[in-house]
Length: 196
Image (tube, rainbow, N blue to C red; front, top):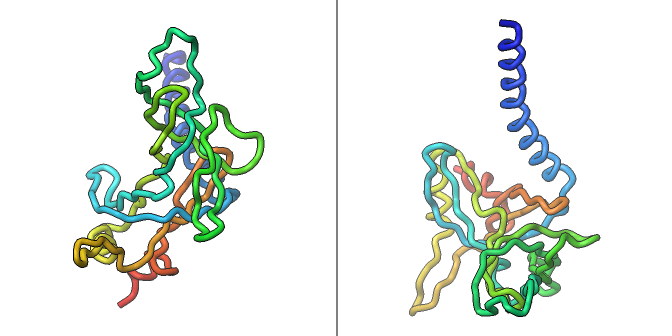
């Protein structure tokens, strides 16, 4: 009996430690991370398990970068597309002040802000889009539809325009990234949603 009680206690502690560690890591990024602005446009789905959120697409996820992964040997099919993991070194655009990916690297850089990204590409070729490690911003129940309506793009003579400029305020620390806030026309989305 005593042995099973100890085993039960170890399993219980492990089950509590994993989510606690994830929360601590998340909070550390928010507290110590460097702030980057990622220009965005939202869409609104729901997750029955985690609540209402806005899916965000980012301009910074598209570009033209060299694939940092070399061919392992000359016999490798150079046209084969593979899902790969790289490290995106971040910088801020001089013209807009928004975050851009300066380059993709095979290993984390020794200094400067970076995030881990997924992408498809031929080894040694080029990469045109990456999957950023953040794409959802969770909201209170009912706020997702309001946010989508507020930021829905408009079509004028076949040209798409976004009525209010929006960006995600993202904190980056040691390759980890957390969305801190969604900013719409220089105000937090929470200010817009709480306004009468």
